[in-house]
Length: 116
Length: 106
Image (cartoon, rainbow over all chains, first blue to last red; front, side, top):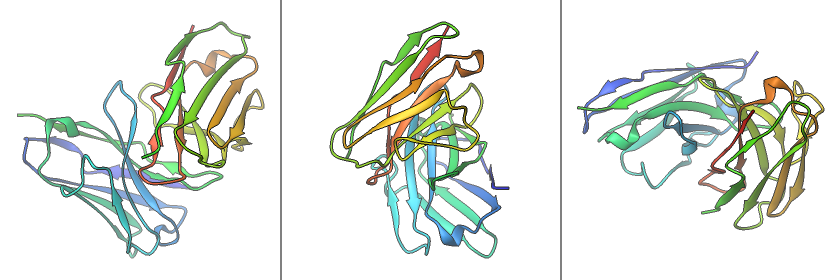
């Protein structure tokens, strides 16, 4: 069974940092592209970042470029998102996602709140 | 970036109704268009992938069509559990882009 479980969310002040993790079971993240998507509560879905199956290629939304870093630990089958210089507008539920069809997979999400 | 225009943003319907939601891409995305259903407090769940293929758990009242730039999601006979928000997403190019969602309400 495919499972993705995010962790690491919480309350942080503007300018602070957080590291999100997504622990995966049921498939190997070394074999597929993995993504982060976020959603402000009550609003729509926004793609944030992706990393290639071999970990060599990363892509970011303009809104997070230079502040967020996506990475993967294949030994632990875990995806990460290092978020620095956080802004109030980064407040959202963050999902790790496998856009692979059929099936794919989303985690349950972890809430990041940026507030003073 | 590829823009996804989803309409309507919301609709009111009754059990048994047939409804259609559309997504239009700003450029050709072939069939790399997928539909998700999201209920409050839950992660999105895949309904239709590659424009018209039904995910295995999904009832056959859901269907998808289209290719290129114009796509539709149809629910042939709305059931109580179908009241939710629906999103399209294109995976043709990064940044991946979602439609703004369609909230289906009673």
